[in-house]
Amino acid sequence: MSPNSTPELPASGNLWRTEQLLDLGYSARAIKVLAASGALVRVRYGCYIRASLWNTQSREVRSRQLIYAHAHGTRTTSTGRFVYSHTSSARLHQFFLWNVDDLIHLLQRVRPSNERHGRDVRCHTRPFGEHEVTTVDGLRTTSLERTAADCSMMLNYRQALIVMDHALRLGADRGVLQAMADSLDGRRGIRTFRRVLETADPRSESPGETLARDLILRLRIKPPEPQVEVVSRTGRHRLDLAWKKEKVALEFDGKTKYFDYQPTGEVLFAERRREKALMEQGWIFIRIEWKDLFNEAEFKNRLLRALAGRPRT
Image (cartoon, rainbow, N blue to C red):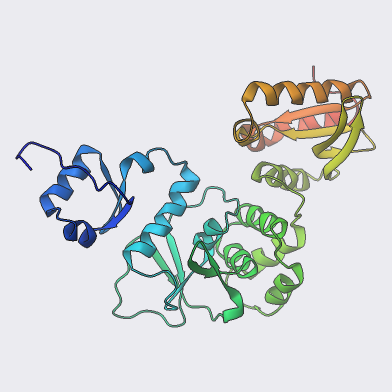
């Protein structure tokens, strides 16, 4: 390599430890040049990823990638020394998460003494059995139920409710979760765990729906029914949240609803066509976005007017 040239990355592979790059013939200086040029991204101490891959990943995928980088950096995927837990396990199970940091959470049987962990790692030692461990993408991680319980005892109520709704939707056993909650008297976070378990609803299909449902409860407004099926001249439909007697539907316009699966124009057209057909039958629609969940007075006013049959024009 000439003094001013940038070396080429390996043709195969995307994630490397420093020593792997050294073994492939890259010097410490070459690695530094690749990182400075933007060809490599250091995702954690001693671990690099191909920038062309990293730059195309969504925030959710990057958060999981950091866990894979940790596993790669520690040269372990299933040694049994630890399992990924809490929000790290939630990411591996692909739970919905909201406003959660990217720290790596590990569950170990004993607190490490001389073992060095990075500043982005948090170790936990609450006892666990092998029945609470599963494997996701080759990584040992806590089960659906243990993950939901641990997250509920660490996060705030609304964050925990989002996790619990989704865990139940993905198949977590409510009976197992209740047994856990009953056995953890005095533990930090147990009140939040028990509260979210009591109010969680697996019918919520997004974090926005979960937060809307919680806000309605806090505002002491008559609770809606999630995922209500209705029929119109255009077919059978499901409403995010609905008051069937009052014929009021609350729809959450989250970005993923329009951008993940179909071209935006097609989805919007289908949504408006469905809405028009149901309005002909007397349904009133309230459409909300993320920002509306944090303007409680306006949200309450819109909802009460609609339930009284006086929607805002």
